[in-house]
Amino acid sequence: MSDLISVLLWIIGITSITLIGSLYARKYEKPDLLIALYVTFCIAAQILAVKITVFDFGFKQFFVPAGVLVFSITYLLTDIVNEKFGRKETHKMIFISFICQIAVLFFLWLSIKFQPAPFWNLQDSWQQIFSIVPRITFAGWTAFLISENFDAIIFSWFKKITKGKYLWTRNALSSLPALLLDTLIFIPLAFLGVAPIWPLIIGQITLKWLVGLINIPFMYLNKWVMFKKHQSFI
Picture 1 (cartoon, rainbow, N blue to C red):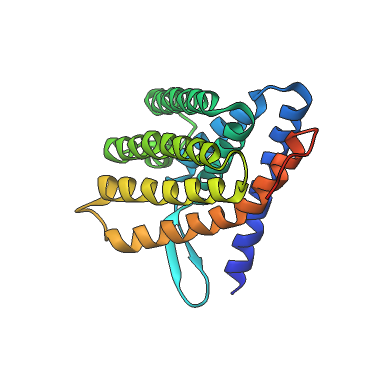
Picture 2 (cartoon, one colour):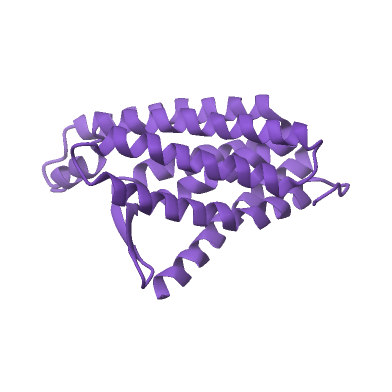
C-alpha cells in the first residue's frame, strides 16, 4: 500500500501549487499566474506522457502515462478560474494553453532535427523520448480541447442553476465527467489496435478520479484564498 500513500502525498503536493495562483489572483485581481500554471501543467503532462509508469496499490496495479497526476490538476485550475473570472476567461485560458502546446511540440521537433555535436552521443535517446507519435498527439489534443471546454461549460451551468451555492457540486460534477470524457476520447484514438484499451482506460480513470476527489477540498481552499470577503462555501 506504500504506492497508494505516495500517490496521495504527490497529489496533495502537486495540487498545493494552485494556491500560489489563487494568492496572486486575490492580490492583483488578474488570472495571469493561474493561466501560467495551467499552461505549465498542460505542457509538463504532455512531455511526461512519453513515460508509461505503474502504480501498485497492493490490491491492483495501474499502468498510466507519467503525466496523469499533473494533467488531472488542470481541471481544478479551470474550475478556479471559472469561479473567480468566469467562463469566457476559462475558454481563453484553454485556447492559450493549446497554442503553447503546439509551440512546444514544434520546438521539440526542431531539437530532434538539429545536428548533434560529434561528442554528444545521446541523439538516439533524445529522439526516442521526444519524438511525438502523430496519432497520440492528435488524440491528446482532441481529448484536451473537448474535455477541458466541457468542464468549463458544465461548471458555469451548475453555478448558474445553484445560484453560486454548493461549490462541491459544480466542482465534482464538472471535473469528474470531464476527466472520464478525456480518457474515453484519448485512449481509443491513441491506442485502439495497438494496446489493450480497457486496462488503460481503467487505470487512467482510477487515477484521475482519485485526483478529482482530493481536489474538492482544495477547491474550497482556493476559493477561500481568492476572495477577500467570505461568501457561501457550502
